[in-house]
Amino acid sequence: RCDAGEYAAPTLRVAARLRDLAGDGQVLISAATAALVQDRLPDAAWLSDVGAHPLVDSDRPERVVRLCHPELADGAPPRVASNPRMPR
Image 1: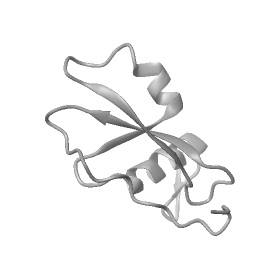
Image 2: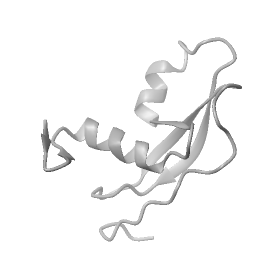
Image 3: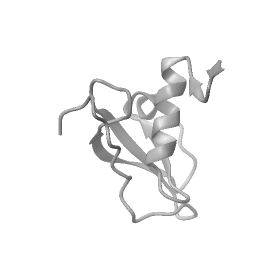
Image 4: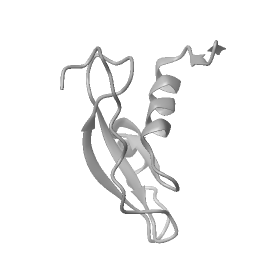
């Protein structure tokens, strides 16, 4: 459910925040999602842990994993989220 542009379910909120961190052509997923898909990746794809990042409206950093493949953008690190609720 979406209320005034904000997703109500916590999982959807995390997905939306990860989308906001991703650069053009990048696919970022949570560590929980990475654990579920790591043995089911297509050929030539791999996962790269890019560290813990603060997400907007979250009390703790989220471990972020990048899906890598020769046909996906690579190089630019995830954008840093500004979160006043999260100490730097």
